[in-house]
Length: 133
Length: 130
Image (cartoon, rainbow over all chains, first blue to last red; front, top):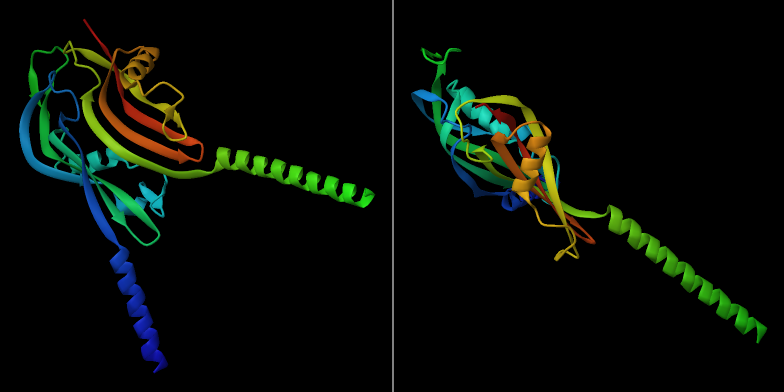
C-alpha cells in the first residue's frame, strides 16, 4: 500500500513537472547574409541548413526564468549551421529564439536557418578566379 | 516625570535607529538587488553601414555595449541608445570605418530604482581601401 502511494506521488510529481514545462518561439530577424557579399562570388548554393545553440552549455539559462546567466551565443548557432555543409557563409537567413521553460528555470536557444553557400576564392592579383573547394 | 522623559528619549532614539537602519537597507537593496536580467538576440547583419567599396581590410574583432538607465522604470536619466553613433565611435577608435558580420543582443536589467537597457554589439572592424 505504502509502495503504491510512493509510486503515485512520483507519478504526480512527474506530471506536474511535465505540465509546467513548455516552450515558445519568437522570430528575431531576417537578413540577406551573415557577411558582405558584394565583393564575393557565390560558386555553389549547398541548400538549406539549420544551426542551433547547444542546450547543455547553459549559455542562455535563466534562473526561475528571471535571472539570465550569460547571453545566447549567436556565433555557436552560426558555426553549427555552416559546419553542416562546410559552407563559407549563409544567405537568406532567418533567426529566431526558442524558450524552454522548466520548473526552476528556462533556457533560450538560438536557431539560425538559411541557405549555405560556397564562395569562389579570388587570387591575390584579383583577376583569376580559383574555386575554393 | 524624569522616567517619562527618559522613556520618550529612548523611544525617539529607537525610531531614529530604525529609520537609519531602514535607509541603509534601502540603499543596499537599491544598489544590489537586481530583480531580473534578460538578454535576447536582436539580429545578425552583414554590415553596420552600406559598404561603398569592394576592397577593404579586416582590422580585427570588436565587442562593445551601449547602455541607458531609466529611473523608476520610466524616467530617462541617461540619453537613449544611440547605436549608430556608438558603433561609429568604437569603430573609428580602432582605426576602421565600418563593422561587418555584426551580431546584436538586447539586455534588460530590472533594479529596484529603475531599468538598465544594454545593447551588445559584436563584429569585425574593417577599413575600406581606395
